[in-house]
Image 1 (cartoon, rainbow, N blue to C red):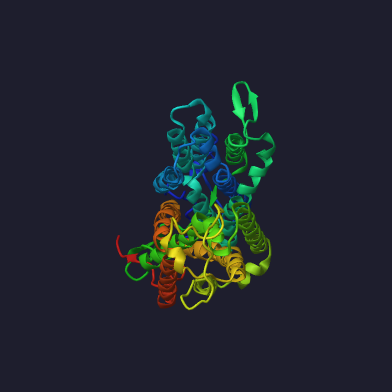
Image 2: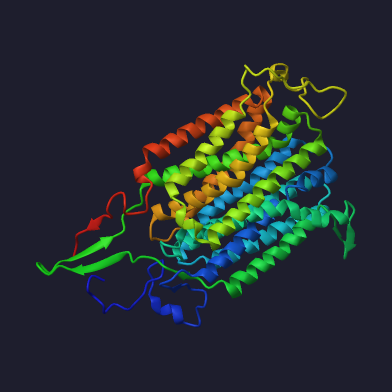
Length: 497
């Protein structure tokens, strides 16, 4: 560059010679590209959809399944089962990112990840054969499967480095949209297995029931993912060279322009934003049904129906927005920092509007006659003074937050994070970003369920309100730093021979 047109040797993301790209003996190595690799990015979106679907499909049936196998199991033990998935994902996402950067590709780690997921699903399918260890085998199954999904961060990283700066937000939206739609559709797929019932059918000694069939279905998804990666995923990269050599005509010195480190503060803010987003999302998932039953006097079945309806509406809105963002030019009008701020203000507004202030006149009803609706004063002493809120404000606000605000957040923050990291291999950085979400998914059920049990919804809401106020102020104060790599401060230049 800089007038030197004789250099023809391309570099892979790990800096190796580009000559190996055409070596038929090494078909899994990535290839360079000057344009966005849309085909492989769409395939990455399909893989992210498969991973998110296999994560979400189990939640409707796991608790009834373990109760069937081990009737004396307690909710606390089941909470460990749920948490272990995220623990494993946290550990493995950084490991997958490091490995991907080390070997200069994402394809092999993706294949290994799908194989690990398949092992986890096989373990889950074998639960029926462990009569004395059902709970521990389920823990092992979810831990193994969670480790396999640690490579999900590589899909975001690939979308970042396989797209031009102009196409970056659209490319990342393909992967984020796959995750969002998989999470939305996954629980609904459980309905496909309802006709099997609890007893199911016996095939070669294997009982395939409403509880075990999701694992079998996920094995099929794992196989589909492997086929996509093996035969349809052509790994290509658009990435800036680490060294740009120029000739100084006055003194003959050569100056190597090296990429400096990305802005740590900007990265930290993006990571904390992701943590708080997943923290809020997991909080509503953890106490959502119990909250509806306590606050609005819903019976169990009614609470499940309302909750499912809310998620269906918000999920449909999110899917529509992702599709519009990916396939129309509406993305050109999305200003990343502005829409990020709006997407943070919306949940704060919802939390403030649904806080049960003491000056409200209405109080929750106390549970009587063995009903599961209303507030159980025998369990929670705060029921006596708990104020009610408007259920329409809660439901409409919920749909706007998780259908609109979080969709924008998934697009804008993820896109900005990749731009802040800059034109370099992003596997490790995206692993850290995903780990932040996994930490949010781990800590939210523990912290918020504990505070909800002791103090009711007021304290969990206060924790979230204070956190979002702090986060919004940080985005306002640090606005000038939340820009693509190299725009806040110039890249470091190493003057050497």
